[in-house]
Length: 471
Ligand code: SF4
Ligand code: SF4
Image 1 (spheres, rainbow, N blue to C red):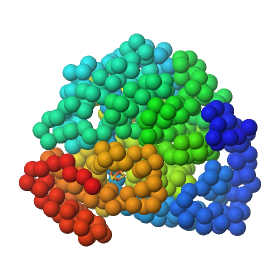
Image 2: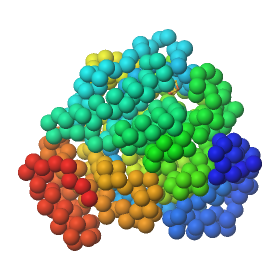
Image 3: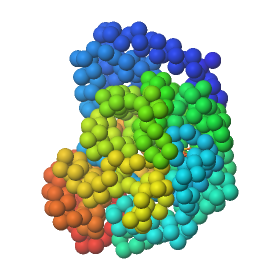
Image 4: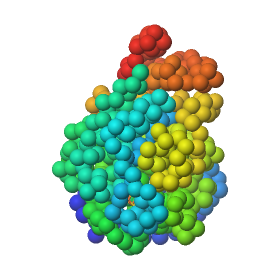
């Protein structure tokens, strides 16, 4: 029985409710009147429920689809302006006892070397990341209670925050590790993590169990209820995601939104971010065996429909996607991207090593500086801002500001200051020249005169060597 407030995965992600929603969407995919009314509701920027949103995703009327894309673009501009936040993944260990059949780290894959970074190696990786200009990391590790116990993760987080190299600092560590206990989530919270990210992979229970035949991750309910435990453990910001291509994308989309509705209903705050990875090739993984893989057009439609359904939830696209594909979806609603990423353990320090320990093949292999220049040339303001988490603007405090569109008074000046830091410390001459012009062009968009004045003063101070200002 569907119940968004329930503690049970089988009730807040109710299979029958998803099927009924998909049927409703299918019956109405050419119903112009209904689609118009849903688009009108979406224009209020308060989001849509999974059923309404599923109709938009299924919509087959070309003019209405154009309106949907246009609306996604408008909402993205209203909530996120032209800013894109940058981060990098940091792989700590590829030891894993799970059997996820789409991931080369699965326990029975004997063709890859297993590697776990020491604290000294983590320090070196962090220095390499700081020297690129990164301020925000997402740490990743397989599930292995012997090799990667929670103590190892906590020690690693402590190491990452402690490295201060030249003007570098990692100011926010997001964590992507396996579903765990409330007690362990509490420890992660106390260690000062930003967002706890856990991809559902697929919301379809039968598929989930087949795709995860062995290991603790086989337990669908334990995995799906992880965000509830994380929030009970004090973590305010959680990041959802599915791996598109494992099951039918419309099923996943409805499940994803129901998960968001559940968090909102139970905790009064929806997900902080949603990630949209697609299945892609890797060691031991043949993408052709996944018959639900989605093409670029469908991918763009999904991004647009997520943007419309949950306007105040950030959306992340990684370097799994090519430059071309990222370019296509940025304006439709993406607010965060990774750049200069290595998806192998030790990948930032071992330049020549083939990516034999990579979790997936990176499509966008450009350096961070190239990604910065690319964004700047497209008139996006790349941002390394981490201010909210450090000012305690998390969870419902963050969402309240976001829903009231107040947060933007902080985002743009913070983006410009962190961009300025990047230009001073790490940029190539070409990126620096282009970035300075972009900053000058964007200062007038800070509408509050007092904030604009403070921003100008701080930009000057950054030029003189001071760092880490925030609004
Ligand atoms: Fe392990 Fe995660 Fe890969 Fe599954 S997806 S095999 S849990 S590293
Ligand atoms: Fe994100 Fe907050 Fe910075 Fe805006 S001010 S970019 S919401 S951390």
